[in-house]
Image (tube, rainbow, N blue to C red; front, side, top):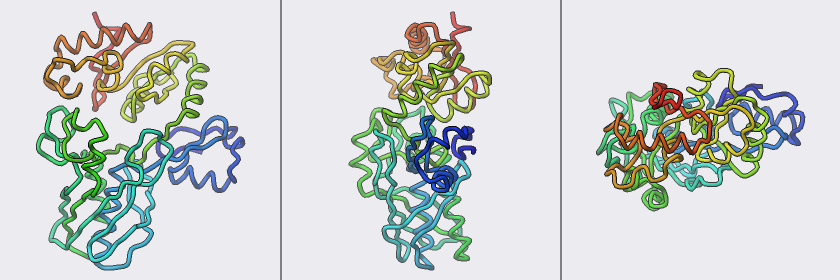
Amino acid sequence: MIDPVNKSKIPEEWMAKSSLPRDELEEGIKNGMLVLLSDGSVLKRGYTTGTTAAAAAKAAVLSLGKEVSDFSVPTPSGVRANFTVIEAKDGYAKVAKIQNDHETDITRGLEFVGQAKPSDTILITAGEGVGIVTRGGLQVKKGFPAINPKPLAQIRAAVEEAVEELGLSGAEVEISLPKGKEIGKQTLNSTIGVEGGISILGTTGFVEPWNDHLGEMKSELISSSPKVVLTTGRIGIRYSTMLFPDYTVVLAGSRISEGLEAVTGEAVICGLPGLVLKWGDPEILKDTGFATVSEMVETEPDGEHLKAAFRKTVEKANGARVVVVDRDGTVLMDSEDFE
């Protein structure tokens, strides 16, 4: 089987080790919700804030003309995300971000509200609990709601589906989170330049699971691979696979040090500057006036702060090659070319 979210091939021997009934396991993998590990155990994915916002928006529009219970929305990965509404009536809908096996996802269970009214066009707006961008260097411009481009397109696509189903000309939809401001205070949003709520994010539509057992499985994969790339996220996976086709690519996230400890062969650290350089130099932003590494890269791409942080990162990598890429795949820094 192929995992439809990360596009990886799942070996038959892993499937055979699982204690789940075969049909239940296959269905869970096909709908993107289950991640199968090498020992046959499974972890549950969740839906991103972007997917949940899309669900609230679609349910709100649908409730203008019909009863709403179970429905689905599109995701960037191409897999449909299934939801059951908490409430949906007369243009008002409420859905909850589902539980998942990610130990640090503090948005699990968070309620998203969509409020819709008919319109001649489709318009998506942000209300209470959605953060506002206050600094540069992010995917959204300063002064705008913190809804990244990909989830914004996802929300719009979900609304378009609802509009077409009801035969409307369009709809104006506001997304809000009653507890968004409160949850936002528990995140690093204010540090990176997002105030007043949470960010609406998501590149695949799914939240990848993580717990200690998954860490153990990844350590086994790293140690058994003669050539491995440790990467930091979905974008890192995409470009690491392209840049290093003969390597095993492992999503390490912020746990790069743990990954390096398991390396027995040749290793590369590859990813966006925010995680890679901050791992190498936790004090990279101190006394710089920048809120994020992305803002620093955007403002001073050849600055001494970045060069110094990269040197520290290469030193901390202890012999592993370090490659930093931007969001379009351009290599910004490579320890093989760095003087």
